[in-house]
Every structure is written in C-alpha cells, then in structure tokens.
Image (cartoon, rainbow, N blue to C red; front, side, top):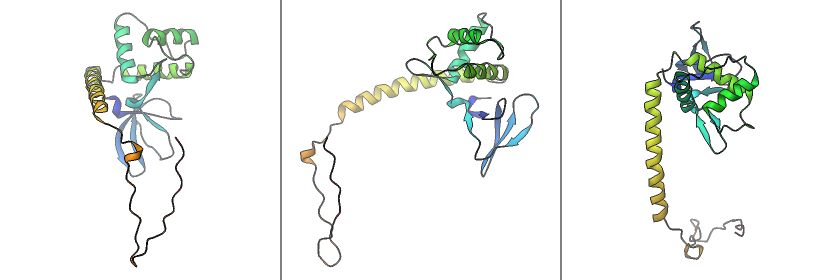
Length: 187
C-alpha cells in the first residue's frame, strides 16, 4: 500500500484506505483490522497522507521522509513511544527523527498523531516503494531547479515604454466605442 491511498478523516480515529469513489465523497476502509467500510461526506475534512508534512525551522519535511527515518532509526535501536506517553518523551523522539522541527508550530498532539499513524502503518506500508519514490522526487526536484535557473536567465522583461497600447474599440456603426478604464497604481 502507498501513502497516496491512505487518508485521515477529521473527527474519526485511525487511518483509512481509499477503496472507491462516489459522486459526493470517498468510500474508505479502516486500517485498524476491523475492515469496516464507510462513505465520506463532502463536509468532512480528509487529509491524504502523501500531502502531509511536518514543519521545520526552514521548510517542511514530507511524511514519507519522516516515516522512512523512523524505520531507519527503529532498526538502529530507537524505540517509538506510546501515543499516551508524556510530552517530553514525544518531543525527544521527534527531535531524534526530525532534529530541526519547528517547536512552535508542531504541537504535542501532532506528535501523538504521528506515533499513532506509525503504529498503524509500520506493517502495512511498502517501504521499498516509498523509498524509491522519495529518491525519484529528489532527483526530479534537483533537475527541475536547474532548468528553472536556465529559463530565468533567458527571459527578459519588456520595458513599460515599449508596451503598445491597444487600438480603440469600434462599434458596428463606425464610431469609436467608449472604453472605461481604471488608472494603474504608481509603482
């Protein structure tokens, strides 16, 4: 299973796998082992896990990268705390996984949610596919950044003095039509 197939529904505990779509929502199946199927409504807030990220001091870290780091760290001996653990142990755990996480914007409730998601996903997610996709995104981002820099060098802005004004509109009787325009703001 991939992260793009897993969603979190606001107000509903746990995670859900998308198994279908209907006209005004999704059909999802719980990942808690009960395999109960529910239909979502358009008013429910649904978060696809492939779009979730954790704030850091400079940027955001995708959940896929965080999950891969948790897997790597747990294989190295780090223990994942229970989601009912005290605040300090959750903060030290996240600090080991994402050292520069934003301490003001990442709340303890977010850390508890991350630990809960890890406990659900650790046996169900395909980490090999996740790692391969992460590497592809990194390579494509690096090449896209290089292309953007080249494009910026080639484009030139036209000076305002060289911009031609449009000819006045003419109505069918041969008279110039009145045009209404608003003056531009001084820059």
